[in-house]
Image (cartoon, rainbow, N blue to C red; front, side, top):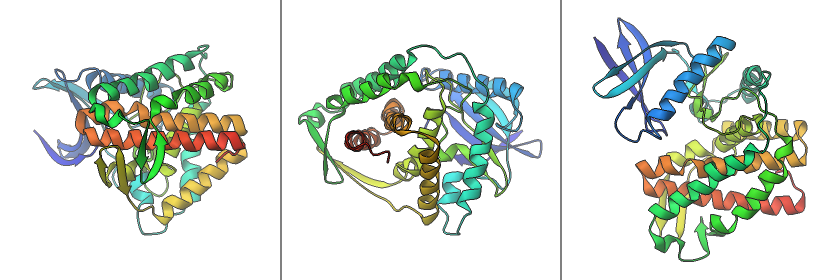
Length: 328
C-alpha cells in the first residue's frame, strides 16, 4: 500500500509527489496515458529514458530509477528521495546567508561531468531549434490568445514599451544562425533551472532532465541557469501579476542570496566566454521563456502572456547590448 506524503509543484503536465512505500519514502512522477500526450506522456517517457541512459554512463548525477508501472490510465516511475535536500531556488530564496560561491562550484563541477562526454554535432541543427522551439511556439500563442492582445505593434512590460516577438524574431534568428559555428554538442541536462538542482549544503543532485531540445549544448544549459538567477523564472512563476489589454504588470523581490549567486555566475561566464559566446547564451536564455508557452497555456493563459512579455523585453535588451558590444 502506498501513501502520498507531499506534492511538488511543477511546470510540466506530469505530477510529482513523495509517497511512502513499504515504510520507505520515494518520489513518484506520473502522467496521464490519455490526455495531452505530446506535452505530457512523450516528455515523461523521454525523461525516463534519458535518466536511465545517463545513469549507465555517469554515477551520482541523477537519482536512481527504482520502479515503474501503470495505474488507472496513468503511468509512473519512482526515483530516490533525498532527505534534507532542497531545490536551489528555495535554498537561495532563504533569508539565511548561503555560501553562494560554494554552491556555484558544486553545480559547475557536477555539470562538467556531463559536458566532458562529447557527441557528434549535427550541422545546422540550430535552424530546427529556432523553428520548433521559438517560431512554432509564437504561432501557438497567436492562435490561442485573444487577437486584441496583438492589435498594436507593441506591449508594455512593467510600463516599458517593447515590440511584439514577431517584430523581433528576425534579429533572434540571425543571432542563432550567425553563431551556430560555436556549437559543439555534448551530454547536457536540458533543463538546468535552479528548481531542478537539489542541494543539502555539501552535494548537488540534478533532477528532471529534458531530452527534446533539438540541440545539446553547454550554452543552452548555462542559459537555463541564467533563466533562474538572472531572469528570475521561479520568482516570476509564483509572483503576483496582472494582464490588462496589452499591459503586463509583475512584482517580486530578489533575495540577497540570489543576487549574489547571479553576480558570481555572470562573472564566471564573462571570464570563460568571449562576446559572441555570451550573446549566444543570452539568445538561448530568451528562448527558454518562448519554448515554455504551450505548457503555460495548457494551465494558465495569462501566465503564458507573462513569460511572453518577458521574452519581448529580453530580446530588446539583448539587441541594445549587441549593438553596443556589451556582454551583459
